[in-house]
Length: 313
Ligand code: ADP
Ligand code: MG
Image (cartoon, rainbow, N blue to C red; front, side):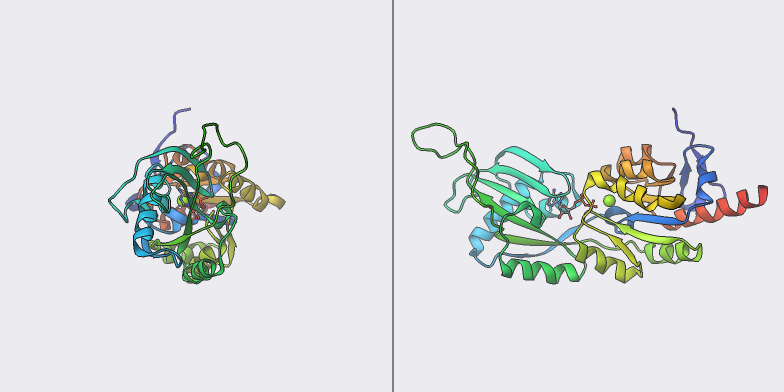
């Protein structure tokens, strides 16, 4: 079906640019009781920057080489964390065999990334990608996360199938993968978000922060915004299930998101609201699109539908 796009014609709706997808969208908007907000790119700008790296067991040269390896792998990923790491160095190493594990991280075989300058499989991602994270790295990560930053880890392993004397392919299980470096990235809360949260509360909505990110980082952002309920470390495929869980008991749930990951959850919600600057599939799965990315437009749409539809009936 071709989406019917009309502008919400009054107040900030018009100013902030809210596109309504179908005639029924505003009808559902009125009864919303819960609003679920994706974190990265929705509550925050979604433009992450590397703030610090930590690699206690590596010298400066090895640290720099591993960062180049990480950036080379992340150049293949669209994730906001990946863009931050890519932006932190200009040098790139040749790579092959890129693999992405959605919600966890990425791996590829990188030239010159081994400790001796040989090829290595470089993995970048959350702690779940690693078999071993030593105490010093874990403590550093915890501290940065408590301050609201996202921390990803980097580690190397010998490539499977490579380096066997006398030919042949290695098919045995790989060695345990240890994290060697931690990278902290920071995102900014959108300037308009605190006002939007206040407006959601004035409308009597329960506000829920939903993210694939680490629970400590998510909690720090939620605390800064006065959001009580945080559902973190949710895998991309599970966001829609979280929304259906919140719908239990017949509660009407709105969801705001921007990413490819968010599309199923936006479709599952009674009211799906996409951020206009986000992924096409997120917009296609939604009832409303906020062109400007300003969350106050979501509160305005709900207030407007309550006023207009409330008086018509
Ligand atoms: P979000 O809800 O913030 O969009 P995702 O489900 O996409 O979260 O990712 C969750 C976590 O997985 C990230 O915070 C990060 O730790 C890790 N991750 C996912 N993709 C990548 C990547 N390309 N590089 C590094 N880490 C990643
Ligand atoms: Mg997002």
